[in-house]
Length: 182
Image 1: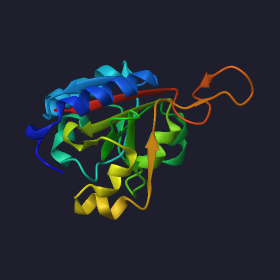
Image 2 (image 1 turned 90 degrees about the vertical axis):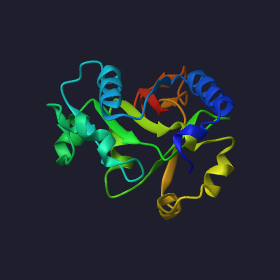
Image 3 (image 1 turned 90 degrees about the horizontal axis):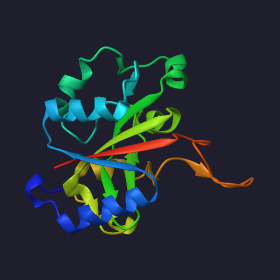
Image 4 (image 1 turned 135 degrees about the horizontal axis):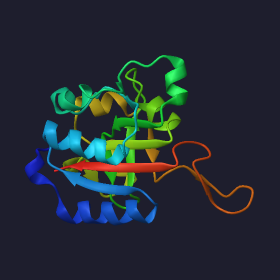
């Protein structure tokens, strides 16, 4: 992974369009604690409780302001996981072609938080957006290499048309909000 100054604007634009096409909401914000806090709270839409999966890839300092908000739950008990409407995780990469994000299944509950809340807010660095799904496997970062065995591609909110018309939120979050750090 490179520094934030090397964000590929054409990949960022392609990712944004692809993610919006699969009904994800996209927002860009500077990689600063105050800006990220404001973006997360805005996306959460006034939710009284928010599950937060501690980051593995992003600097923990980015979330210092956010963690201090009342209602942010960092270490939930089982009942909270099923009752809290909004979950916040990091994504270690984004895929421009599909608008997908990559969330590692880690001990810090990223996988759980990304699947069990009604709204998933994912934070991804702009410089980790790759052109194609296969490119995720070539990201040069020791932590990414460690978790590549256990991760999910998330492409838009959960949806199914198994039994008729398209229904969102059946097998996971009904809303996906992606915050891109620039």
